[in-house]
Image: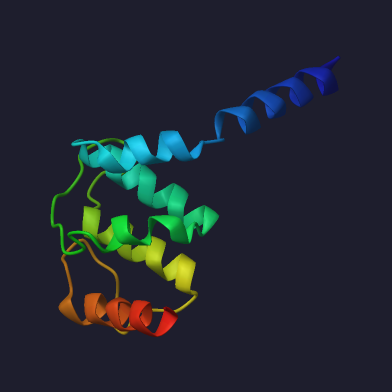
Length: 115
């Protein structure tokens, strides 16, 4: 019986993690900071290059979240982490909540060479 309960829980958990392209588009167009951060996380995990323009749009956004899942993280930080996952390249400087022009330029150069 216990194995069945664990199996059902796993199925429900996996089903809740799926986002369609429409859902992801809505998150990228939202005015909420947390929605932008969630979109960055999904884009980075799925390595969805369709949303690269979203990641590069206002890349130096310093807004910081106070939501429990993203507390203390900036939009810039989430976007850079997503770009790191997609590109497979580590930026030259540490990723912090403060926008770093060197890291931004690094990924802009990567985007130009990627095209």
